[in-house]
Length: 379
Image (tube, rainbow, N blue to C red; front, side, top):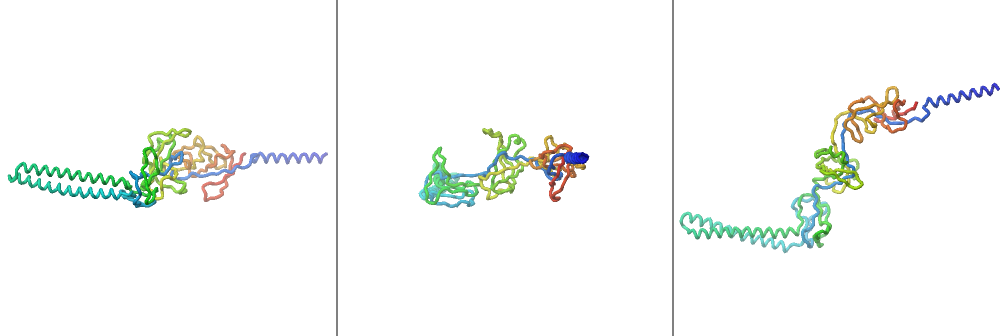
């Protein structure tokens, strides 16, 4: 009986030790979180688009001849750079060119006769002033000169009319740019688009010296965005590469689309447009509303509601501390007061078990990284 009693005592002691160990360790597994220290760096307040924007050219002309005809001259190819007023395409127009030459020669002849009549009128006026010619002769000479001048001007106008007819058979570059697409081959017949019927243009000309993004931003952010603000543009086609841009327009109205948030459309022009930035790319824009240089900052994900953080104390406990914040974006938040560069705060605030007063132990996994691993003990 004495042996059984000793066994019971030993079992009770073991059970007490197990229970004590359970409560000493908090009864739960350790929770690993991340922590960071505040840094001195630049912080930007930014606004981003709500949906993907589109790259477009400031000037783009989808052109077709004003009249139908057979393509007789195709002076450019897709991808060619052209200058303003350069002839890009011509329909068969030999007859029209001949009429232009005939009109020009007729005008030259008429204007030569007009110039001769003007000299005769000047001479008659001089002779009349000296009493060597009659007033009747002088008036006749002046009338003949005026009639000749009118005929000369009419002949010049006729030249312009025939040249206009010639231009209807040509595609002339309205601005310098790059030929994006040509619909038609040498010898093919093209027709103008009938009224109310859209047809594919013969030639697409893009001014690649001015490229911009058009994108929507949330109506809440719209009051902060004005023309002239600097921004950055990114495109899936170019990975993480950023292109500097400047806001040039903020729409003066709000778009109210069905089943979508209300947005305001903005446009931003690339500061350094590149030839490979053709219209059609999808893109995102980050508009820089304000900037704080060399300021204390922490990752935005470390900030909890009410502008507070979990501060790691020197005794190994966590305490919730309120801070005063300034500028912020999705990545970084400016700290105006409440922290120093020597403080350490919890980064992964969403981990289960974190609360004010929790005891922690910090384990630095990589001293070269800003983030360190922390093991949290509930107890």
